[in-house]
Amino acid sequence: MPAAANGNSDSPREEEVIRTQGLTKVFAGGVRAVDHLDLSLQRGEIFGLLGPNGAGKTTTVGMLTSMVVPTEGEASVGGVDVIAHPALAKQGIGVVPQTNTLDRSLTVSENLYFHGRFFGMSARKAKAEAARLLEQFWLADRASAAVLELSGGMAQRLMVARAVMHKPAILFLDEPTAGLDPQSRIALWDILHELHADGQTILLTTHYMEEADQLCNRVAVMDHGRILALDTPGALKRSIGADTIVTVSADDRLDELAQLLEERVPGVTHAKRVDSTVQLGVKGSHGVLPAVVTAAEQGGFTVTDLSLAEPTLETVFINLTGKELRD
Image 1 (cartoon, helix red, strand yellow):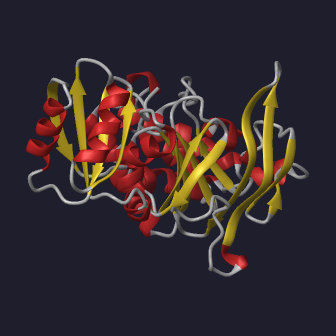
Image 2: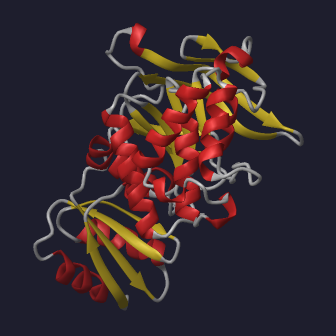
């Protein structure tokens, strides 16, 4: 079973940079977006909140960055009580929201320069840092361009550059690659790896399982405002107790088919209906596909499709909730 959802670590408490206890947000109408969240993040890690739309990820980031007022509970970021001292907490964080918040009246370079000036940098330092970041984020040739001329991937890189301009202790990224093409997504991953290698602490939200797997030291699987499991990506995938996932499509009676295959196919650790398929967790893969077809046919079922894959973080989510990650 994955590590406890409170996210506690054996690292010294002085290395803890984010901590929540019982953090809860209930919106008008009784919608409980985040439900008694206990969380601990350590300095220097990339931590991911993985879950479908509506899981409570963005609301969690909103509370940690003082954009959303909690209904109850406690939260500290960089040792500062976010609820009691929101302005002070903001000084030590960088935030990249889902929406484009770049100033369209400024050039690419000016978006960085004036952000630095806002955070107290001298004119000389802000200009030099803006130039350095434009090089690091592959935007130097667009320094004088208007923001509206940037592609989606470029704009997202500029927002990350702006967020780290004042050297925040913690960088928050809310669905950082949503809507980007694969090439732009990989380019942003490379930049985040580089920032992390330089010691940047990062909390990101995502519903892309590959993104969480590629980037994060630890991942919290989240749904309906609660953390269902928390551990390293590797440990989470091992927690399902299978090294192969078989997806079976059939005409009907999928719940019955799942029960039959779990009973009759050697090596099956678990089987459950997931939407219009049956998913099997299997120890080993040799001979499993013929065994599935044979067992199904003997039980009076017609298999229309079969696929075999290694476990992913989406497999973990399915195992915990019985549904696919992307809602």
